[in-house]
Image 1 (cartoon, rainbow, N blue to C red):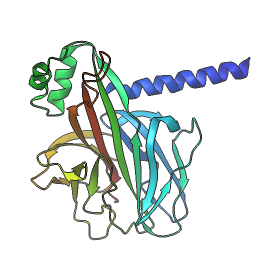
Image 2 (cartoon, rainbow, N blue to C red):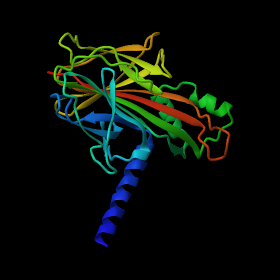
Image 3 (cartoon, rainbow, N blue to C red):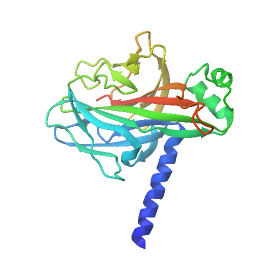
Image 4 (tube, helix red, strand yellow):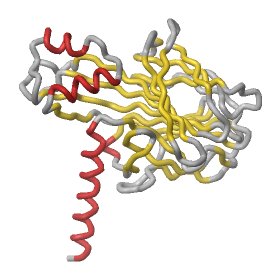
Length: 274
């Protein structure tokens, strides 16, 4: 009986964490250490929350479509067991390099019961025509659904951390154009935002900057015509970059319960060594 109750509590917590991830906040990969030795453990949490603070989500293989570690051209699937927390508990390659952790979630849905909540979200993420497009499509203002997926990357330095990020064919993603662990890093983190492998021009990028004391500041920047942005960063701080695509759902109109909108969330986490 005690074992059964334990399993029940386990799945209750899992359900709670899953529903928490459906509120439309940021999702990111948070390594326990951003600088590790070759062959050392790689430990990272999948987090969902606000202002670079959130809940650590457990490993459930039906909750993601991709979970990998890449160094150079070698890509390795992340192994895990149901309920693992942190979700990533692996081992670094036995060589120096830039390790890129990739994670894409399975589609999820949320329901907007209040029109103003959607308007607030659209305003915050800079979707200037979302409200007018919604009304023009004749979609309801209450009880409508949104589908969403998360597309997260994290940069970890193994040994010297030498190497370069690249595009991995995610539906949307950040590509780090500079390596924050490189000796020649100049304090400007240059990134490109891609959507379906095409640069996103004039896209809003939200920057979460966490200092050594845990305090977080938030700022906004935009990509240029090439989909690129430059973010000034500080030694000893860690960062989360966030960019969101909003598009009509391909399921819109197929049924009364089908989502009418779809969001794709790109995230990149990294640290700047002292």
